[in-house]
Image (cartoon, rainbow, N blue to C red; front, side, top):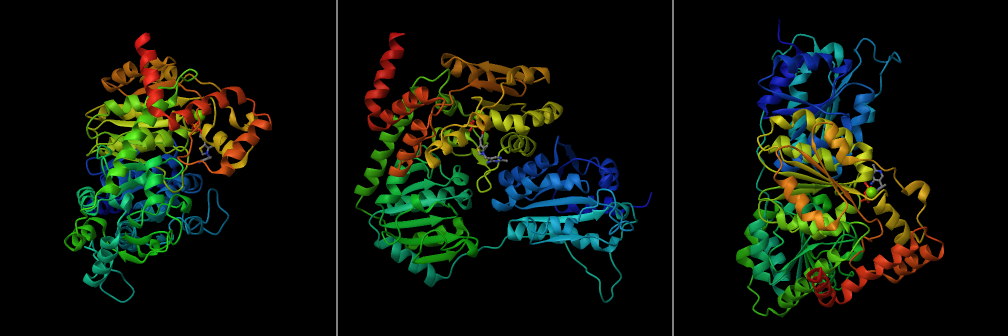
Length: 607
Ligand SMILES: Cc1ncc(C[n+]2csc(CCOP(=O)(O)OP(=O)(O)O)c2C)c(N)n1
Ligand SMILES: [Mg+2]
């Protein structure tokens, strides 16, 4: 059989280094599936339960490896299903290529079955590059450009392939004549560093500052040593945006952890007390957690000039790669000898760690979710990869897990979509089969799609050299994050009609599909459950029955938020008794953590 357009496409993708494509079949991509079958050694096809999951996994691949992620889907419904996962990649600036089928060229424009205007459909999410092939000779440059543009622009691109074209004979090279394209393979990322004069301007501001606060994001994930060294020179504290959680280890005393609604109090104090804000590789959105305009001088570095000077009016805002730029900056920085600011930050962190401890030790009904995370934190295996879904789990992931060097973690940072937790962890297992992956997911997200994707795990786990994939389900029978947002942001009582979730036996379900299930409803058993899951020889679901009345308290509560909370009680929140009790305990922990933690310890000793 002559090589088809589809064979050539897969060959070309593999020459670009792509080894795996996540997808789901359909007659819009039958030709492509035939080529996968013929290319078995060259390209893996990972069959998911839903095309959106394929896009999440491709996004996870990009996030955890730095390489391009690829997903594919059939025409019409399959292509439409990809969208949310592709938006997740787009908003978090990940290079992902989507390959979608289309009806036959002869049928297009004929209101044919499953005919959807895919160029228009993908025009927003893949605005940098979306093209439909109409003749075989286009395929070479469509693949080359889709991958290159995804990498250069750190974005989503899309190739649309009509099904009849997929089975045409391949055209590897067009004749050397007018109107043809002759593209090639390969992309090497450039070194991007600001000019010497601009670096000096940045250094002058940073050197003049007495209280420097660094805020680092996803752009610093590959700049760990540089961030630490610059922070040491500047005597700065380092706060981390959610996607930058793995950028610097949490065991350094000047790292204040997460920032924002799911942030820490020391990050809040760092931002409110600094005289100089140094933002590197972050597009953290919420202004109320940054210094008030005019109270601090600002320096920013970002690889993407479009993201500069948007969140805070910076005095010096430079386009540059984080690691390269910080390295170039170091010789221009003067070591700060006055260390009072730094001491204060470290003191705040010591206090805060007590608060976290005390809050996690508060009793819950039946389980205080924070305790699950602090117990996991002590046991995190080296080089593990953690995902968190959108929901209350993102708060505990951000605050209670202490990352060490070599670990990775992610979530849907900018789109903040539910449903990414389980597919991200599966994507992590395919990319790094020898590492432990742990997904922290709410019961809403499990019911939305996590449970289905566990079937994908049950299909593939035996292929992984280390089978450990652990899914922690926060089973609170509630869409808890939103319940609390309704209470605190809007002053509405919990609307049971929208918030309460049906019960479901997640552990039993895991067993049903050949995985291990651990049902957890006693706080005394948390440590043992983690030990069991972490030593399992197959994927595990921990079905943890957690208390929905433990608030995901922001690090700083405004008067308006406190008033809203009170309003939601006055308006008759159905859970007000437990909610007031739990919130009171958690707030007390914030005020006098030492006394509270000691009390817990005594109580534990007493029995
Ligand atoms: C696709 C999608 N739908 C709705 C939301 C809004 N939302 C954010 S968090 C959340 C609740 C999540 O509930 P669950 O998964 O049970 O986690 P919990 O907060 O209860 O721990 C909702 C509905 C969203 N972010 N994404
Ligand atoms: Mg829930």
